[in-house]
Amino acid sequence: MIVARASVVWASILIASVSGGLASGEEPSGDCFWPQFHGPRRDNRSSETGLLRQWPADGPAMLWRSAGIGHGFGTVAIADKRVLVAGDVNDRTVITAMDLDGRHIWQADDGPIWTGAHVGSRGTPTIDGDRIYYLSAVGELVCLDAKSGERVWSVNILEKFGSENITWALAECVLIDGEHVICCPGGPRTAMVALDKHTGRTVWESPSVGELAGYASPSLGEFQGVRMIFTLTAKAVIAVHADTGALLWRVEHITWNDENILMPLYHDGHVFVSSQKTGSVMLRLVAEGERISVEPVWRNTDLDNHHGGVVLWDGHVYGCGRFNNNRWVCLDWATGQTKYQERGVGKGSLTCADGMLYTRGENGLMGLLQATPEGHHMISKFMPPQEGEGPAWAHPVICGGRLYLRHSDLLYCYDIRPAPR
Image 1 (spheres, rainbow, N blue to C red):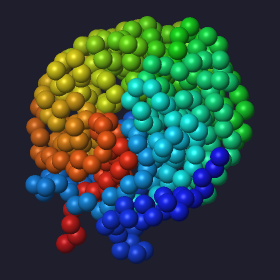
Image 2: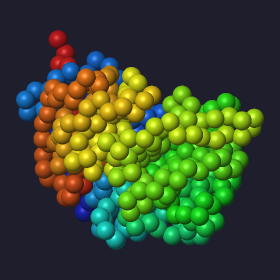
Image 3: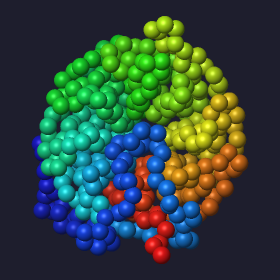
Image 4: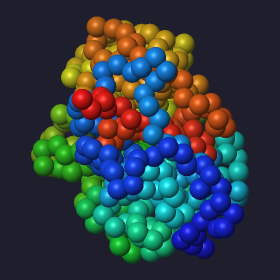
């Protein structure tokens, strides 16, 4: 079922829910391109500069607030003057397209919602040119026309590849690699698959690693001429050949309740992963002829990231742990040495722009600080409106001089540029 436009009831709600906004015809400045989870490079770093280095006491100016996106924990993707986000509306998973003023353009259906623990959509849409891809919590992968929201194709990856859902439901944000959509159904048949992005046809299936999917999203890297895709399964970190689907290596990474959530971070021949209780692990890639293997470099349990992501900046990894009393941690990338542990805004997520960390507590509190191993020194903080249901788990996004914060059924947009002189 396609919902190309909101119903009359929804339309009346949406008109009333959007406030503020820009003057007619005015557009935000800057490079507004954040087409997938954690941005263009999937590294959680914005390329923007010239943003505010300190916020007013009550926070940056809110440009608009938009409701009616449905309950969920995934964040936004932005491209071609469109803001995309997914949420649960009644008993359906719905993808919403908005303009840069927060006005809804269309809403499209992606099947039934997850009805188990922590009800709410998980993933972030992926924008690729004139197509949008989204994987729901129950495995419905849909390809939509970006302009109209009309369905191009869809497939349930759990049903198609003989797998089953995981304890708290799939949370993967799919990866576009050239002509392929990469997703990870897990299970006895395969760990990772590549689908033709135009038709949904299966291109390759990796071997199974004998376990279900994790909650992680895949990332892409190249080493010694070999392109590979990394992900965390329920019990391991794996690498698959990006062109053939061949399993290159598997390293066991057992964590509490199989909650392997972090998208593996690849940089300069090394892969970093982190999970609650188990902590952080650095792996070095090794080439032996055509064979690629890995070896451990260091381990650190101070940073045991739950689902708030990490950032690599200037030779250091920043993120929040869970079983270390919810402290924000900085680790040396090369050695794994802990540089600091601080409480900050409380356990949460983050993003990075122009050497600044934007931290968001799951209580909603936003913090701004410099990304430096010398200390977690808060420059500014503010509390957005507490209108949403449940914890504020959606990761913050910076795009076009704006800060986007999602909480349940609501999306807030803030201006974080200096005032014009």
